[in-house]
Image (cartoon, rainbow, N blue to C red; front, side, top):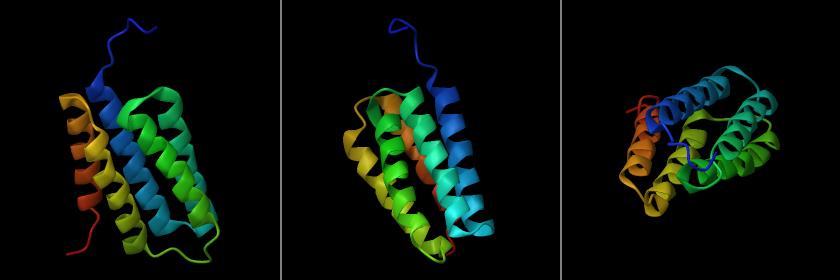
Length: 116
């Protein structure tokens, strides 16, 4: 399995789709349900990618989902800021051009939801 080439296009697409699902869940569901969706994406990222930015993104989502689950109400803009800060930190740990492109895709997905 270690010899297989990672298809970063598919991984990035799935992570971006998962992130947009999380953001939509935050907008439509209560805090408990939205944090569960975020936690599921985080666990999927950590299981799919054993290291690198995808794994780190997954760990950060799982940790953040635990914090969000304790809130009574979620404010979409606050959660977007949290996710943006997670993505911003990933730029420092991206070691390859593919990982940097993945982080850029995630950042673009969040920007599409931010209110200007």
